[in-house]
Image (cartoon, rainbow, N blue to C red; front, side, top):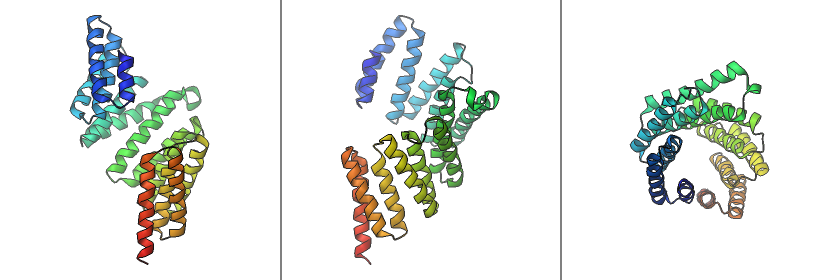
Length: 269
């Protein structure tokens, strides 16, 4: 029943997923399967978050944390940190910035304490990547509240860890390079933005990322902001071609909007 619920979740059938998970929860509670109950609560919390039901997600994530801690799990366990990270993201979505910042900083500090104590080379990839993920999510939060310098600093740290653990030709590395480029663009640091977007494209080529078209459009937009319309058009056309190849509809739409904007700018010259 849990598997069917997860499958419905992956297919975007959120209401069906919720129904199946509630049936699974009833069965787990009746058979006193505490581990299954905790796991289903976590799935339901993620589902509530996807449906923008933030109060429900907050309650469920808190329930999961309490159950794990009551079961003897340490507060610095990766599972606790991961759920705390999701909870911080819920608070960010609820505009409870104080709790969001506390949550993100707890996750970062907890993982950093492990790195300091044991050394990067002695820790498993999950622990290191959870630190990078905490940095990444905190950076996105900072970006949303227009703290660009701080966001950039955290994105760079997340990227450096992804580079060390995942390597250059990894989807997550490409996404982080693109994010740094986006911050540079917002700061009007166009030359630096171009460098990061070009790196993101190179990384995306290696990882065969479906986002490569979006990265080309972002690069094109930076050229357009500098009035380099020939370069901008070349990038956005390439973005459109590559997005069509991988059937990335959102990126295709971005590319079309970019080309339309270039056309308008050319007409007004």
